[in-house]
Image 1 (cartoon, rainbow, N blue to C red):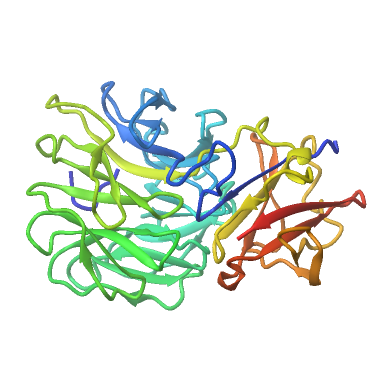
Image 2: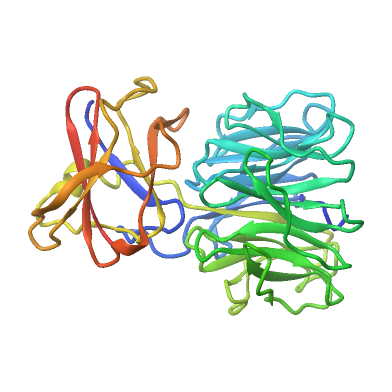
Length: 415
């Protein structure tokens, strides 16, 4: 394995943070699901499991190799690479393995997909123009554009939490280094500058950090740095192989690939705290040639029967708790697809008294990662991602969704 390989208006509202798991009933920090690749059944397939390794499920079940999964921040969709068309293409599916669709159709190799956290974009690698470059496309495969144009190899793209940046790996300096660029390909900047290999970047949802793998100290290990490349910290100390880090949805944990319990190339999925502590094993392959790798940690999609509008609005109910400064996804259903323009006007938010819900100040449009609501086909829900402010800590707010039928749906938050 190469160092760079990785392989009703009846209206129900469900909320979770694209950067933090909100403290709603049945949800706690660092939960969600981890998608990963495994060859345990003789060929590579995409699996999903709980962070502790329980409930491992094969999602793809295809005779061809399926690998390199990437979950969107909502945990509702998984993009992956597949050989099922006799060359590498990008596919996507629901988090339960249903609705598998092909997104690229090119005689060249398209691989290493990476969902943006809001699920609207996928970055990927292709050699369709004769060299490995970074591309991006809409989550349905449309709008494919080239982002890098360099004679060296560019690979391993990953979106920043707000979707405005992409970190990637390039060989343009004569060895693998980590770069960042704007999501449109402009402003490409070198973040690491080592004579060894720095690969596998992963943005933390919080705190302005990037985890990555490097062999700067001999073996391949997991490190963490600021998003500008400063303040590098080593997180793992293993004589063989630690790579492919993926942050948990709340940023408190990192899943990664390791040969600590085996002998490379046999690898397992482990998790650890974001500071490197509490390293725990999630897969148990043994020394039988089994490879478990390329973990991708996403939020657990909500069971749409857990919360209803009345649960959120009842006077004696607890408000939805969010972390000030996080990205909060507000998801809702309208009995199927009602078109892209379901709002009569932009959603608004307003500060309220935490004790009696009395309004404080005036309502204002919420700051969103996308100007329009996103509809997730197959899962049949809409989503708006709300960018909250760090100075809201200790306050309460109500978000009002202004729908096309004239109704206004308020949702209460405490920060």
